[in-house]
Image 1 (cartoon, rainbow, N blue to C red):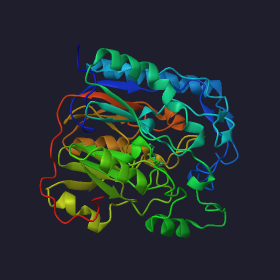
Image 2: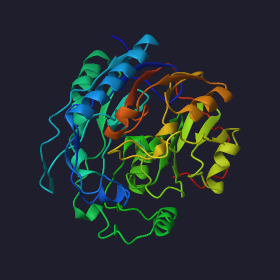
Image 3: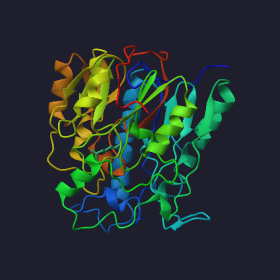
Length: 375
Ligand code: DAV
């Protein structure tokens, strides 16, 4: 039997990946976890219900094209099985009126070595999202005797998991920035909650963003689950809506990371990178001033690229600054149009989850200086 699942980072040669699907996508109604993540001036406020079919079709066309480009580069591509997302979620602890999507597998599937973990996400509307990937994981389980199929402890998502009245339209941007810099987020420490997209995997080290979607308890859980790995808590004070690390801090190859210049890693958290000769460079400015309509994410999806190996990287086709920067950094950028898919859950990294990358668990940070980020 073959080895199917193996991935320790975001840059070793990609051989097998899951690419999401936009079918049946819904804009969920407001709930305690989501109102904090929709910027106050966003057109998304107050909008909910199934997304217009025409936009779903356009997004799917770009997702299908991404799958084809990947196949042309020798990558095996699997696709999830969408649910009818326009159904309520009912548990003994809560009820909410719809689910969301399976466009961004990166949010829920965390691949570490030969294990894929379904993440305990903080959105009630995303409670059952992992089911879209179960047929694939079941197949990997049957075919790969080393594949570890796991699920993090399921959160209950009662009202205790969120701060009440944390959100208020009167809270200014300055105040928000102050809160996030002080690591004051809507989610509480009641239970373990994280999104897989908050975890940056670099071999023996996991850098985890503390933000709206991931709490400290999750990092404590990761530390106990992986005694051989080192878990680091990082945060990026310039971000008023910190969700997911992949439009903020993106590794391109061993020793090189691009960092969102509006969300720089604080000085004291850089020590571990500096002590091991990692270069952190400002990412190029986005080519667009606003995200596409009905999009949750910021224009910084520009840096949410998909690295194929230490040289080749897929970048959104209209992001000319980012394409140019890749070239300057010695990478070979492959432009792929993807903006029609953004609204469904993000860009190229979001829309994919690693199944197999050629390579092992390297120690990129042998020089463990006194590191304030270590959990
Ligand atoms: O900048 O809006 C998007 C990250 C999506 N995975 C942002 C973060």
